[in-house]
Each structure stands twice: as structure tokens, then as C-alpha cells.
Length: 122
Image 1 (cartoon, one colour):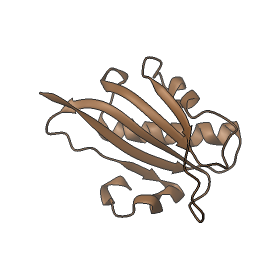
Image 2: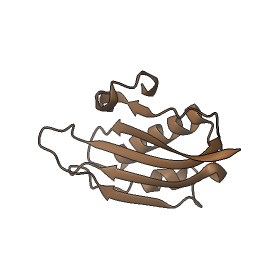
Image 3: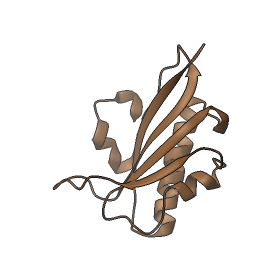
């Protein structure tokens, strides 16, 4: 039997330009897909957030380029908290998998510090 799961992930972005945002999002999505054995058919929806210092491109563009054209995608602004890690793209991905599936969250590069408590996410 299948059930609904949610994955979290984040990646740091080198610069506020379209190529850097797309590259970081692509890397994050590919890793989430690989670690969790996902296909577009199993994905329900995906929300992306960007820190306030990133506005050169929508992360959803990278997801569309990966073939997620039928998955509902949404981009939003991350809450701006003083002292928080700059230049970060985050995602919350909903998907279906077998009951015994263990979600593998993904935190890459400088964003690893956001969830250093999740050894499996690194």
C-alpha cells in the first residue's frame, strides 16, 4: 500500500544570477529524486523558497527542465531572519511511496548546516 510523504531539502546558491539558481536547484532536485527513487508520476507537488537575496530566476524553471512538467510547482520567498544563512533555495516535495519507505531528506553544500542533526540528509 502507498501513502503520502513529504521531503525537505536545501542547497546553497553561489550567486544571485539565473544560472546559479538553476544549477543549485537542479543539483538539489536530482539528489532528492535519486535518494528517494522518485519519478514524476509519484510526485504530488513541490514548493520552492528562496532567501531574500535571490531573485534572478524561479527555481521551478530547473524542475521543469528535469521533466516535472505535470507536477504542480510553487515558488515563494523564505522568511527573512537576521543572521540566517544567505543565498539558499529550499524545497518541500510531496510524493507517494510504499508504506515502508524512509524519506531521505537532502541538504547540500553550505545548506548542510541547516539540518546537521539529520545525518541521513547530508
